[in-house]
Length: 361
Image 1 (cartoon, rainbow, N blue to C red):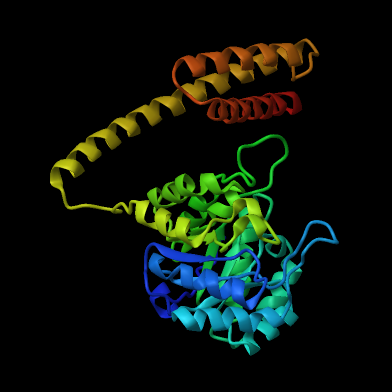
Image 2 (image 1 turned 90 degrees about the vertical axis):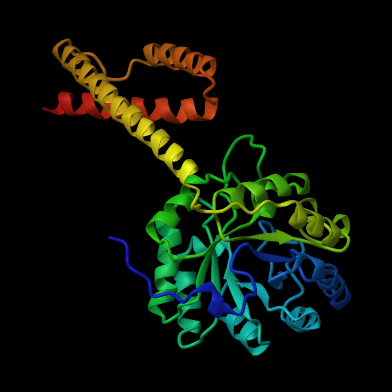
């Protein structure tokens, strides 16, 4: 059962804008000049929080792992220069103590830390009794329970200024994204923990600067609370994640281009039209459920035939034929291949479960 968290509203965090919140700054703090110049270049974006990595968890050794604690002062000085709070990533209690000593305003927990409940608990224990906002990135793997568990651990330690960062999920195989967004997961988080603000990180989702604007717009279209975007005065020379960073000038341009849509309206004509269409959706959904139930009834009868004739449940060639045919039919109807794959894999999984129950009766 989900725990009801006791949370403070974003207005209590010292952040100027309620929506969209904009967090921007370099992937890594490299020099005092680099972070200061980046910060000053972001003034025209109406920036809410200046970000900068101090300790960088790298996949392999012998790559740039951050400047370390010395960079905390550089980040804080840059934030003071443009009068905005600053945030950095912490991965253990030592990072927490160093960040608090440097008067860092907001902390975030990275994706590789969120995946480890022991590490999250260590950070929560180090922050017990400290009134500071903490943002939690989703774990690298698509595990909503791990993500939610991190919020629960922090809240149990007395922290009430808690937010989420959606940065996408690692995946095998080819993808146009660095980390697949899998939007259904942060949407489900929003449903189950509605009081947690969710910031979207287009830099890590895309891994490519040219994709940042469309993903940013999509995040706002889905009513998430804000954006975290990596910016650097000379991104091509950045010591980490150069490909996904943009200049402050480009960040300003993106911010100006973004359209902020309303979550609701009082336009009665629109509301009446929407209600009619929603009733149509409800009717179609009822039909879908009834058709699926009929399909599973047929699957159970097939299971009975297989059991009576001592035949295995899975028939590989039959499934391949179904899969190819349904993919083509879906394409002809304007349905995406990704949706059809997920739909029919789910249908196949449930059919196998239904037939397995028959076999085990």
